Structure formats: structure tokens, C-alpha cells
Image (cartoon, rainbow, N blue to C red; front, side, top):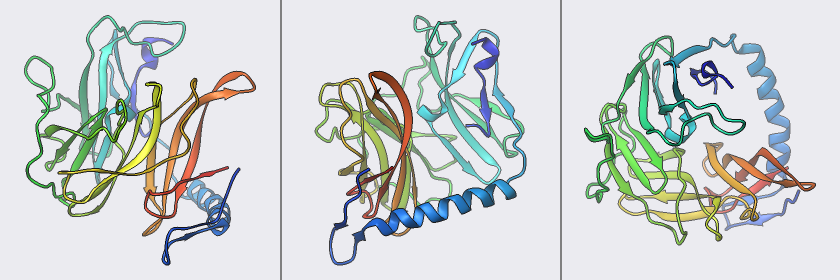
Length: 288
């Protein structure tokens, strides 16, 4: 993989059982049938209606590595787009990410005001002059998640927020550990109300390796958080389930796409899986 491959580009990126949580929430095979019928139609419609993609360079500098926007977050307000990334130094390797582990890497964010046509590079305000993050603080005032310019960022055991479209950040603030050895959070969240937000993160497994995804929630503006439910079974010793990407299907239903690694027929494999929750994250069912 050459240096020119390390570009951060815009525009790119079976068991089913009946469950009844209470008198109002019910999950059965009808969800699976509905998705099986609707998703192909939506895909076909999108293929007909979607114009051709344009690919543009967000950042490029000879000898540098720029990547991992999924680890940092992306936000948009119409034609204004902000995407976080990691900036390091390029190093060719026979496998793995071509970043030099012996040289420093730093968070950066790119901003476009014209729908991704042009980009400017910014240093996030949660970094100090020496390039290090500010010390973890305690959140004392509830966050208004419905602010029109709100953005949240989650990374490992910390969260941050902005109310001016990522120009300035408050935080980092520490997340509780939810009884796990460590957290492996990336940015994935759904705003439910003024002080109500769900986040979808990964934690370390029982053996300390990565990772096992879950849904967490705050209903008091980020002052406290609780574990809602685990997404799927805990992976085995050589596997992981990380980096959920989640959307709301209805008032109670959520769909989360998970990145997995494991062994199939004795060989290491990587794939993605969909998981459906009918009850706002308490229970999850794998879509085979």
C-alpha cells in the first residue's frame, strides 16, 4: 500500500426467538419478515435515485498517514461537514495499518462548508498547546442534546460535546466503566430528547481483549449513565465485536451494524453483522 492510498476521502466511507418485554413491546419473526421485504426495495430504490459519487481528497501530505475517521467521528449540518481523523507518519508494512508506531500521531478534524467539495484542517480545541488532551473533568451542568449545533464525541472511556458545530469542545468527561476492565468507545449515538441520549460503544471482554458492544444511556444530560443492554454474545478468545453503527427504525426499534472478527473453519475471518433491538436497546437479536 503506497502513500497515496492513505487518503481520507469524503463520501466513502440463526436463532430467532419470540420475546415479550411487557404489555407494550413485542418482538417476533414479523420484524425479520418485514426487514427482508423492505430492505431490498429500499436498496433498489436508492440505486435508481442516487446520483454518481464524487470522490475528493480531504487531506494529503507526502510522508504522512491520515485515517481512521470511524474512530473519531463525523457530523454534518446540511452542507457543513466535520470529520475527525488521526494524523501520523506513513510507514510501509507487510500487513496492518501503514502508520509508524514509533512517531507521534495526533487527532485532527476536517471541515467542509460546501458539502465536501473543499476542506480545511483544524486542531480540536480539547488539545492543549503541547498537543495533549486536557485533563478529565466532571460534568456539572446537564447537556442540551437538542441544541441545533450539538455534536458529541466518544473515545475509549471519555466523552466530549460541542454546541458550535465542533469549533470548540467541552470535555473530556469520563464515562463509568459499567463493570468492565476498559471501554473502547467510538462515536455512535442517538439523541432521544433534551437530556436523553443513547450511545453504542464497545467494552473489553472478560479476558481484557477487545471487544463486546453494548448500549448505554443518559437521561439527565450526561451527568449519569446506565448500561441498557449487550449487543450479541461475548466473542470468544480470538474474536471481537466492535464499532457499532446504529440507527433508529421506530419509536422502540434500533438497528446496529457491528464489525466482527472470529474463526470460521479454523481460519481467522472478518465480517459485519446486523443486530435488531425491539425495545430501545435492552435486548438484541442477530439478523442472520
